[in-house]
Image 1 (cartoon, rainbow, N blue to C red):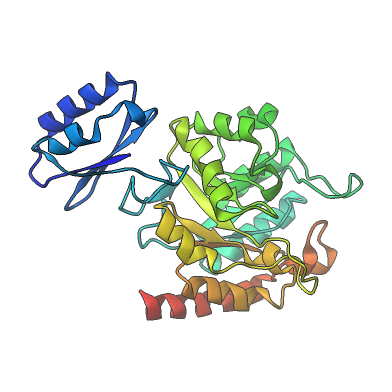
Image 2: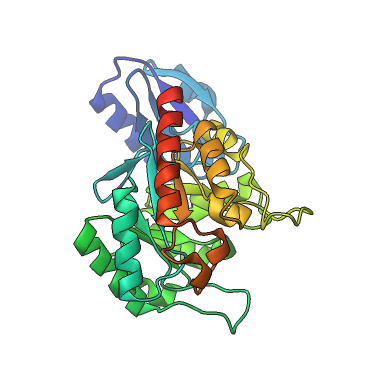
Length: 333
């Protein structure tokens, strides 16, 4: 349920209304816009007399929210959320490109790629330290050593870092990581999501291989319900009957998610296509569709990469893509 307050409502009036609603065992989410203030009521709203609430002088309208996701819902929070990662803002008109290797392999590799993507315009460095792989025999990442190398790359380049978490047990290792990525396989690991919700650290939440957009938003709700509103939604392709590409990139997810939610939407064209030659086209298309940012895999020697080399751009290719993205942004903003 939401209560839309009239213009001119004072902070004291809002405070008293929230106190009254709290006595009904409801949590109240306050969203203040330039023209309107919205109170989102979370809990057993059947206790609320809608007619009584709507009759209050300060209340313009009372509406029930039919969708199961509440805090991630744009009705609760009409204004776009802006998530800050280090000094980088994402959402609400702020666009960010995250780039780096699928997996951190060694110090020379990550430092080289980090400097290259920064020079090409990337604002955030991505890199896998813990790698969920389909085969137990495939390279699983450097683990804690990979985190250390990412932090060294951050120290040398100034780029904030994003890397994937796989287990609650490793959460303390991510203390200095700027943004934590939840991969597609963990999108519905609800215990992990709740723990991330207890932090204030930005979370990049990837859509599962076969999950609906509502399920993605419900996973975001798990994080937000614990107090962490710094969530970014990531479309990274879904599994369909098509086998020509690694996954099927659902670009319609971008405008739909913006319609349903106030959270920033990121697109991953690398995992979606699985082919480096398709990444630039899909990255440009995602930008034109209104994405708030991109996450792109870049490797200094893709043919010898230990993980997903076939979908990784070279630094030169990424630099060329950066120019195209800037032109698209200039055209649509």
